[in-house]
Length: 218
Length: 212
Image (cartoon, rainbow over all chains, first blue to last red; front, side):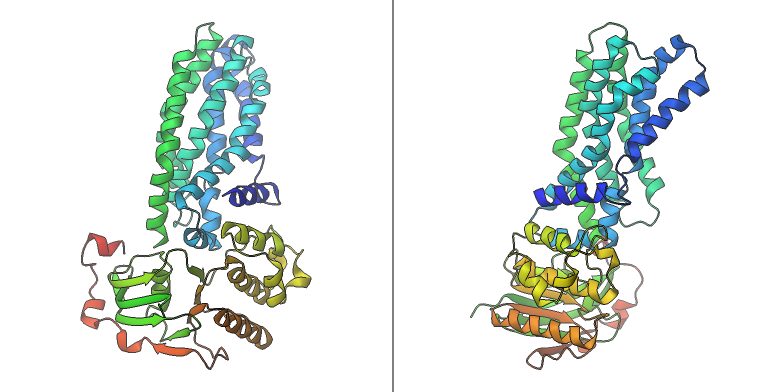
């Protein structure tokens, strides 16, 4: 499983691997919004938590179809399914690799993007924390969607339609935590809910996704 | 001697239609079996069932767990990784032996540091077959293993299979061409073609078969 993680990270950082694509997309979203909304700091600061979370979610979505589709096309998925590694473990590892290449950079760069959107200083730590807790759930849910659509050509759009509704709870509690932090409140409650969603998803998705993969491999 | 693989009265289906049925054979260590038959008869489907990627419709497949090394039309190579990196990945995934012997056997030593994307079709195939050697698994299940190989490479491959059999392994292969393995027994699947009246029926027999 370690070998799989290392290989996926290697592939992501080599030519055509798409590392940093999500981050660049996030940056563009956060630069475009002030152009669209106008330069009033007050308005931006009010919508910043929502924009940041929606941006993170879309950036995550961008590279989801690569989780399994590439391995499916070149036959690696068949070989992984016959390997001694349980398929559930392979799903977990591949989702983890996706998180490290897209979610983690977003978490680390979020304070910078918060500045672009006039996010109040008080909310900055909560933004980082909520993204750190919430983005693993985005990668795991995405892995489930990717497993469902793995056999389909051009399944990317369908994948988005399947996965985005599943992202709603994470979005609600993630953005709420940042909003409460910006307003000077105590964001503990939404953060706990966010953590609960992530943990539930971490526990359940490997089994659901590998079941979907097994059906698609037949 | 216990069989590495024992297939009893097997029926397999592709897309809800039965392909072959009533197939039985046993594969002991040091034995090779070549499956023959016209296109579309279900050789690939049968091999996927044996590899555990697909459940059989009927019958039994008995093999010890974690014995099968499967190689199909797609070699499972990553173009961005070098030949050695590709092999090393599969070697550590299967907890198999090191990659040096495999590189030597399939004559890939000089290509070890090349990205797999730059290999020719035949070289990719050789790398795909070298992967079998690093799995350390006793039962090779090979689907058209010699596609795009030249005569010299086919001979290399036959030699590798022979060495594998000599070490107590077994091989189950589907192929149309002569592999230069006179000791292998041949099973023609044509007589096992599924009953045409059932085979041509469009609707699958039930929910389970539709997904079989």
